[in-house]
Length: 188
Image 1 (tube, rainbow, N blue to C red):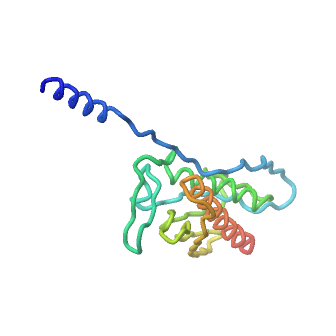
Image 2 (image 1 turned 90 degrees about the vertical axis):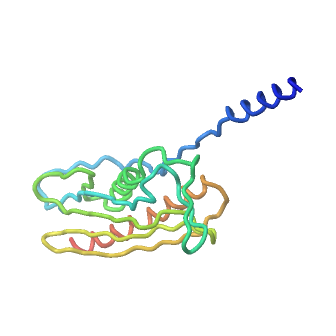
Image 3 (image 1 turned 90 degrees about the horizontal axis):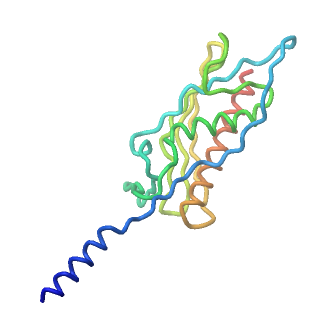
């Protein structure tokens, strides 16, 4: 009887000590080519990506998956490698720099004259129907004018798993950056 109790205790302790490994994700982004501005010719104003805001449910470490029209699950072991709002801002700067090659795009204000971009992300998750959702709105301030536009991208996820989800979310975010770049070009 004593041997059985000792064996049970050992099994319980062994089960409690097993750990589940965390997996960390970073949005893929290739760095933009270095931009150098020279004097002489008229340049469009620099573009300051002031802020990318996310709601509380996206601001945590875990990736988010929408399991129904009203239910969301936040992953406990599949985590963002750095805060999502920072990743979104950094990749947005890189994507806009690629889409606007003649324009200096930065996460910090540059000079006295610059356009200002603020983005509010309301959705950045996988969804029960196999799609990755990227939604929200952006506000671009240019020469005293304000342009405000929403975005709502739902892309099919071609493979299962968190790796594929992160890659698909990155594509949706890149499409959003292109939408912003197109608007920035028309306001120049």
